[in-house]
Length: 588
Image (cartoon, rainbow, N blue to C red):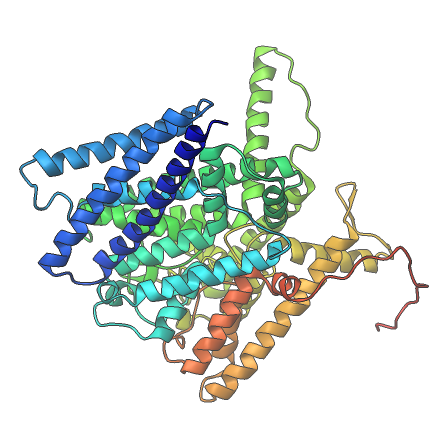
């Protein structure tokens, strides 16, 4: 390679690194611009810096196309073209428009978007490498959650994030609850946080629901179109992909499904809202987006002080049905939703082929075993839970509702405890039998690879199938003409045992730190935290600092799972090619 060409590429590399560096600083200043009150002089400095970031971002994007040896994908061309066009329009308006002094202020939504897009583009060009020799997949997963929780805590402590300030422990609690999509709160989200603070919470919910590594890895692959085998191997272990080559297609499906459902849900929620309660169109859009994302991610956060039990909303049954639709789909898990979409598409094509007389190739086991177990278990829990809630609360919390309203409220009350965290009834007024039902539903939680927590539906199903098999005298668990793998059974019982240990320790510790609280309220709080449900019977805000720390730890463990933490901590041993003699141990 000629020396001039090498020098040119070296200069380009330095320039691209420079653009990435100033885009990071631009994002930091952008956040600070929102978080702190700025003087006029500093605001002018920020405007100048924004111009530098946007201008160099456009130059870097154009240069990539000049020096690229191969053609870019159409999707990348569209993204870059849109970003460059938006940035040029903003710069032209700033230099030649009538509002020169304010066109790059922190209140300009288009500038916000352009700065974020510039950072995303430059970040995606970096070489992201997950070195398995340094961090195993479990450690990487745990660290990614810890990092975003800590970052979220500091963002929530910015002066303009709250109206009256917030302590570090409360900010950490709120950030953990948002990232772990729990919904437990120590301060009122509606009245304590500003729109900026609520937007930070919403961002944390989205990042925690899908996973920050999903975003980072997919966008890097999206722009570069390639990645290392080591990265694919690490990410396949984290996502549970059966094939290494399917990692990024899985990421793509996860992001597309999430955005599609959230957009659809927000659109329907918008039309269910009463204009008299929220007169502003922009406020209704924000309310719809916030509750759509919070519902799909099973977070349970709301911009209403009384959650959905607030006047004007507790009788809004179309809104409640849309919220149920969102958090049930989010709780099913991405692999199940993808598999379900494939099956529905095949079923529709099959019916069309039947009526048109065309031949349709039969595809056996399109709905796989994992999906069948999940869907059946979820259906049983929803139907059984709704019936029991309806019977238990008919003359109690459901007495104010009509016939259809009772059914919707009972359905909401039975599905929300399984990690969603919204409530449409007074939780402190529930019958004791209903509270016990909610304990069970919270403990079971959502499905694997979903935005929810708990021990998961498949774990509960495998445990149930196991004792049925033992009662029948079988040595294997068989269902749908398939045998459940031994490793799945072992994982299921490890998950159940560890969940009870974590919850039990949490109850003991909070009973020590807050001895005046009742046992049922403490247990409810711990089960809710572990399952990332977010429901409470009213003691969260009144907990001492030590008890809040305990709940924070339980929320984190419930989201990433104790088994994952143990895998991350305990050193692996090599498998040896021998087996000891088998001997039974007395159980009962």
